[in-house]
Amino acid sequence: MLFFIGIVPILFAYVYQFFDFEIVEISDKGYLELNEEEIIIDHQKLIRYEEITDFDVKLIAFYNQKINLAYRMPTERRSLGLSNGIKITTDSQKIILNFKLENSTHQRKLEEVIKQLVINDKLKNIDAKKLIHLIPTRFKKSEDYKDYVIKQIVANRINCTEGLLLHGYNSDKEAKELRKKYCG
Image (cartoon, rainbow, N blue to C red):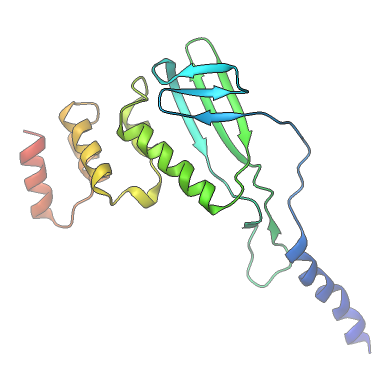
């Protein structure tokens, strides 16, 4: 009988975890848009990509994604999708915003937009290595990514060794060929 009394709280906690969301203490509404030429904040503030000197995006989780995962432990929570952040720095201002991702599709679309911003050289005033690290991991095997890294090596924005490591190669022979071709 004591066994059953002791197991009730554990079962309750285990079931409760599937409906428990993270705790968020702030509530603020705004607007954030990344388009072809600029970033629009709250429908009025425009920041052109040429003005940006530092740019960082943290994609933590989308709405209803499990966070705090632990093996067979009732500690999981579901995200509200609000922990994602963006930092935009220009010569005159520094803006740090949190934003909500509704689902994995929104996350994939945002990752694609960030990749396109980097590969199309929209963020010209930011260090090349930092830009390369902005590109999400799932794009690092794509030809666009590899072409962008090679372009940065040829332009001497990153050194040859680091660039080839970021580019990736399958063998030492391929690495030597790439070095000979692009590092002169």
